[in-house]
Length: 165
Image 1 (cartoon, rainbow, N blue to C red):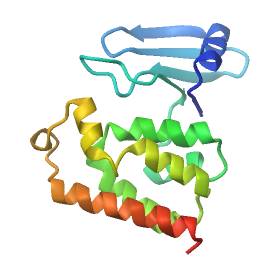
Image 2: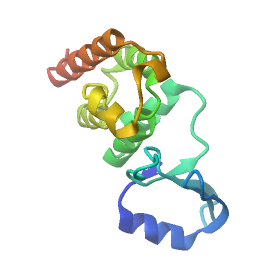
Image 3: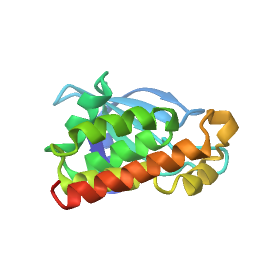
Image 4: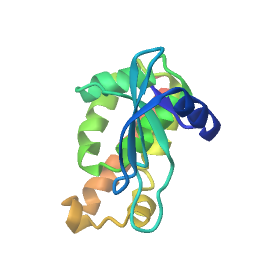
């Protein structure tokens, strides 16, 4: 589902046909003719100062957040967990919903993938992430107390999953 390695991205993009490109959003859509799969190349953390990591993923993504997590955290590769974390890190508005799903299903998820996902998501280091992205608490309509609670919940899930609770 996700390809993060630059060399693998280049190899895969060379095999595909570009359908459209949006230079303002740093997005491109591709079609792989042999597998008939649609792909999206983009920079989820792009802002005025830098573009951040480039992500190449299949398109479309599951409509339900729980299904998306299941696809990337149960039997998928480590790149899928990291890619999903990077992609969802720019949407702090859904972090509360995300943590509810993770707390309900953490036993199903692969330990290593869950750890990588939560690290890439950046809930526990939200202040550094917000500074990097140029977000403000007022702009996101999220208070710092709620974010601190989400960070504690994230640490708790990682601890529980590490010790098989």
